Image (cartoon, rainbow, N blue to C red):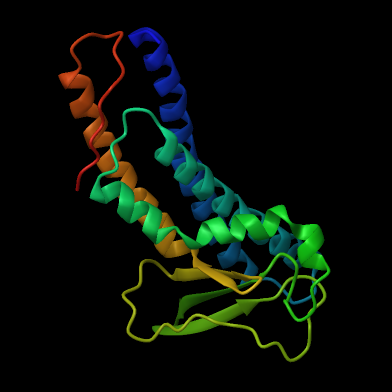
Length: 213
């Protein structure tokens, strides 16, 4: 394989990584806006029902984007497995299990006592200088639960909506924390990419990317 071929192969991975990070950022910002609007809608209204579906759609969009990011970072030629890479993979580990859940919905739908097929959500929000825990259970609500919720006690919050968490098939993932981890990784990646481009011996060569803190 020539250096040029390796560079073009690497470029495809880097495009995938950068787009996955952007998808995650866009979906999370949109999710927060949808939650804020949902809080103001009348229970049982058509708009409230639509927002529930939009919220759930963006939640699973984030799960998918983070999983794509994980796969691409692990497989990208030239990206070294530095502590920053290991940290990202560790902080987003639960998203792999959620991906397995959604890829086997037929089997999951046949299980009893597993809660809503697309999972349920919980988040913390600030109202009148107090933090409250909110839960959203989509679909045909199963009476009695039990349904897990986030615990805002002792948490440093970021914005009026935070700790948005998904619970599905016994797996939980904090989308707020994971999205911030992706944002931090993005900043490190961009700095490391600039350095790798400056150090590249020839423009046709693939990059050696060491993503550091």
